[in-house]
Image (tube, rainbow, N blue to C red):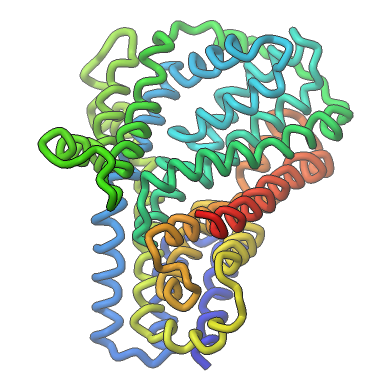
Length: 441
């Protein structure tokens, strides 16, 4: 009966988001309370689940999401993101424009939202397509798939950070393995683009505004890379230093590494480094009406959705769902594939990768022990499995799908045959890699 209650609650949440366009925060929050009532939980336990679920998740994740958005906002506003893309192109060369666009989208989508990455980079995609005589469909989908891969698998984008917090997984190891898995997952996608997407007829037409955006004054490449690379490096370094084998030994230096590598401190340093990006710093940028205020407005919905997901997860945990399903799943051998399957279904059904990841993590958290995923390493791979599932399928209910098709001029059918299939290739490649890694790591 309890399992039917869960499915009914999830169905209500999905219908509310997809059919009635209700905000995911409200849908998740009310859905969690309704689940608690239908499951017969005592009133005081429902209230306790709300307080612990919302407060516990936001206490560990809220600041990380906000600081990550601040970094992305400054990179976007100052043109630092464009500088990073141009630098990557200069390293790879004009002969590999498709690869350059894919890697540019991949790197920029680590600190910047995928939609914003595509919107910023689309003028460059057009320009390079015309100059290099490369099919515009190829540069468009390369950019979109590159952004998609890192958006769901590499922190500090909100989805992976929220998932790591809910599952209590090591963020440094998620970054390390997420980078490896997502980059390898792009390889078959690249060949898919070269083999099939290249043949899609699509003409790039440059607007005056596009040309102006490309030629605007921007910060140096060194300054542009700092806010992205420094936090990632510090978090990974701290994770290595914290290994049980103590590879760096003990003492003041190691304590310092562990402190600056704490995710909130590392991302705070990244945010401060992003303040160096404006060519002429104006203190109004840091005001409530400036870029900081804008970043808070962007981060707020994600933070609250994450908190609502935390409430749902705590409600599931306190209702005894872990004990109930242990008998059904212990012999089923779902393991690492259950988080992937749930995230894949939710992403396909309602469109948002972030909502799919937060909801799936909330469902899976009480089941980690039952699924054999409660060790430190397996928590990391469980989080990445959720990220892999949340990559696909990007289609007509996904805002990113519409950004890709409408800005490029791809038809809906062309978008489905290129972008949608491309996300499936990334998703299935990633889960296959994750499964293989669980066998050897």
